[in-house]
Length: 95
Image (cartoon, rainbow, N blue to C red; front, side):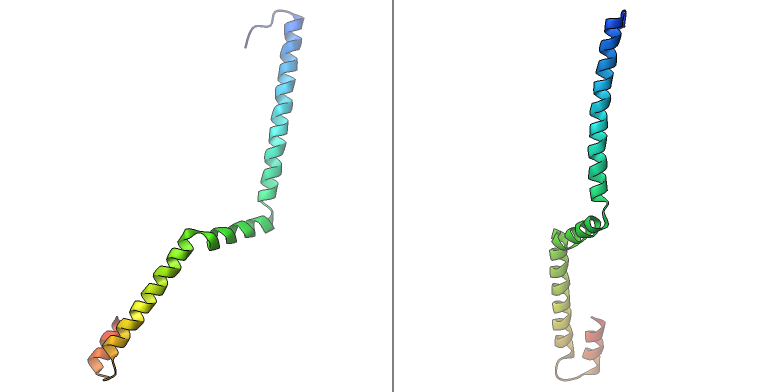
């Protein structure tokens, strides 16, 4: 900032500071409006559901869980078999 030596420089500095203040107030009001919109309960719920159900992790988790359940079911059926042996039933339940 330059030195103010006369009243004209002072008036120009005041005008610049007032313009800066108005610009900062407008920016602050925009941020406040944006924040109010984001914090509405309906938007919070909608954003949460979007993150949960549209994320790539959901599809991956469902596939991994499905494969795990299928593998467990097939393994249990294989070890238990149709003969009904006690050892195979125990191993099938453990697996």
